[in-house]
Structures are given as C-alpha cells and as structure tokens.
Amino acid sequence: MATLYVRDLSEEALTELKIRAARNRQSLQAYARTLLEEEAATPSLEDVIGRIEERATADLSATSSTDEIVSDIDHGRRRG
Image (tube, rainbow, N blue to C red; front, side, top):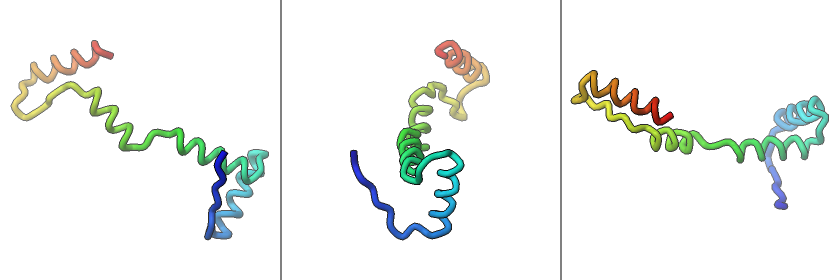
C-alpha cells in the first residue's frame, strides 16, 4: 500500500477534517483514506459525458423532421 503525505494543509481544513473523522468514529487517517478512495472510485465528469455520448444514437440536426426525431427517440427507448 502506498503512503501519501499532504503538506501545507491549512489549520482550518485540518481541524474540520479531525472533527468530521471524530463524528464518524474514525481516525483522521482512516477518514482521509475513505474520502480519497471514494473520490478515486467516482467517475470523472468527462468519463460520464463520454459514456452518454457513446450511447446517444439520435441525430437531431436541423435537417431532421419531427417524425425522424420521434422515431429516433422511440428507437433509443427500445434499446433501453
């Protein structure tokens, strides 16, 4: 397991993290580790947008008719 050192953390931030850790009945180290692991497991906004774009199949360009748009929406719903 790796070691991470955090330098130049403000006293205010450190105090708040200690309070939150105590409220969760965790050591500061355990609390910080949990925060970092949760952050690392959360997909980035760019990843989420990329997944959405991969699934998007409708071409709603200005030249599409209303019937084509409705058809594309229905097709996307059936793909579910």
